[in-house]
Length: 368
Picture 1 (cartoon, one colour):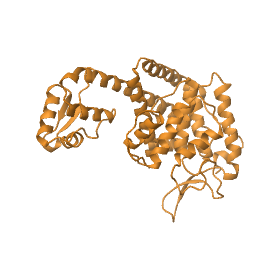
Picture 2: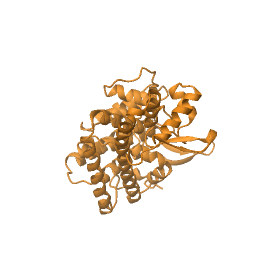
Picture 3: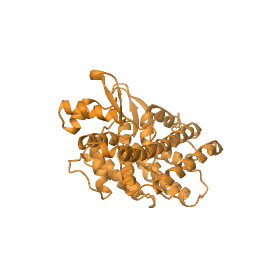
Picture 4: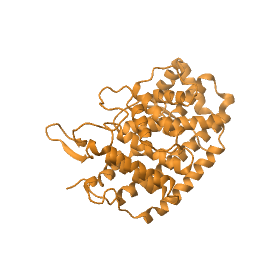
């Protein structure tokens, strides 16, 4: 069976554009909500939200590829690239690289899409890598670029990309297509464009490594350029939750130009990523109201711990805040920790579940 790029009509994808009409309306409605809230945010809250979403996306897009990054390192690097005060900590090369790429997508969303854009992102992403032969350029190796699984004795080939010798021509055609859709086709469905662009790029798989992360950054670039404002949605975070389905949907196009299944999945994920961002907006608003309500009764230790809990985002600490967490963050004695937590529960800043060592605490945002 031929790979999709070997088919006679490649890269003329087949799909039902009308099937995306309903999702397109929801997409623009959600985008309007996000943009509207941004305009009314105070600068401090806007910076906080921007940093949190960029950090979340950098960590999530790396996690999808099996690379686990420390949130604090990524966030510190993002703050630095945004020109904000950052912690004086040593940042690993991989964390610094993905943080730089995500910040570049955010800051330079309106710049033209060129091969230099991709080369720059690849150089950032491969920061510190010694195992990659070609950095900041398309792959050049003669070996087939294959996606495989299983053991070395019996590998299973899920997909094979175009040969390296053909990548420059494929990418030139791809970039020209993207820019034509972005500049000339004013009425193009934004979900359709972003979905096809991501799939098209992943099919070519132009780099030795980093194709998935760059392909997801491309989604943000295209949506932002079409909306004419940075699109702070949570696509990578949502894909991280649906990783298996994501790869299955991509693989459905390995041998066929019909991409209805992929676009249907992509539309669902994109709308869910917007809703996740809207939830984060609500969370930041709740945080402001939370501290306005409790500020006069919190001591320095309690405020420090609560700020740290909010830093964890919507999900909070996995399994909830424990007394041990509180002690580590506040550096207080066990007796002081017990007293502080009891006070936070009594003023309804936290809710309590469980008993003894199983006791956990959660932010009380009811009514906020």
